[in-house]
Length: 177
Length: 253
Image 1 (cartoon, each protein chain N blue to C red):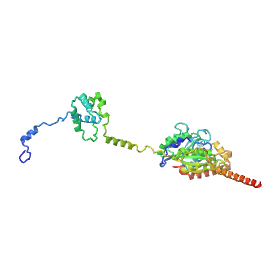
Image 2 (cartoon, chains in turn blue, cyan):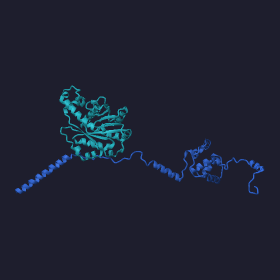
Image 3 (cartoon, rainbow over the protein chains, first blue to last red):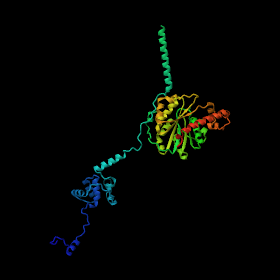
């Protein structure tokens, strides 16, 4: 650095900088397993269980704290991530505990907000009935005889006239007495 | 009528029909179902309209059924599992109007069929016209009301007042409170079938002759060849055709 504060790269310095080897290696030996580790965590696997899988199936030994730090740093953002297809080799290497580790067999655990949204979507899909709702019948045949009101009114008239006639007779009879 | 039959789904909206099935209501026998249907078939013929015929009257196997008058009518047994499927399968033949004469029995079969198949049929654009025949006998009225109770508004109703006696009194149909309610709810079209002399009708039926055949002197049978018989048949035909013309909307698309 010069006195004026401007950083000057001299040819010598450039040579030194160029000689620095490229950092191709992952910063952590867990880096190749990142998608799987994060997925396992979303599936709810414990850190101990992941350590065990890494150790037994992938022959990677790390400390608990290393794994915890690794996950903590790389699990941001917490937005749902697209599923990443597993490489067959890894699946094969985990064949002995395939049921336990195969990420394709389980869906990732959803956040509570996602679960609520999914529940709401599910309920919404049932809001509209598939078929028209039954409505009350427009007409219900009640048990009982069919009536001819003409006959009934005729009968009433006849009864009324006979009552009148009887009552008249009675009055006459009383008058005669 | 079982109460459960009133709990059927009722379609609120009917699409424009592309075909129509016209069927007599099963139930009370001897009310003149087939007599009316033969006149209806001839009315279509008079209008040069082809209709497919289905005869589901299993009681009148030889004489008196629709197939007796119209040999080309397809005989179908309503009591078979797929008997009433003929309603819709016949339409596949390309004739958009099917006329089906039901027997007196088989009401429960028709109920089950309607409950299972109606929705699909309606969605396919098939409309139904249910023909109820009422006579002075209250049992005929009860039968029509029973069918109204389960068919609800899934069909159009055509009620035929058949005068089975000279001075027919339709007081049961006209004044029974439930019949009044039925008419108020479903607004059926009502036509009259005038009294026909039994000797003409019986003789024609016995020989499988339609009213038209008598009216057009297509028989040499002595009674039916009489001018009086021919003219009466012509008068019966004229009157029923006029009535049917009045309600043609229920009988065409």
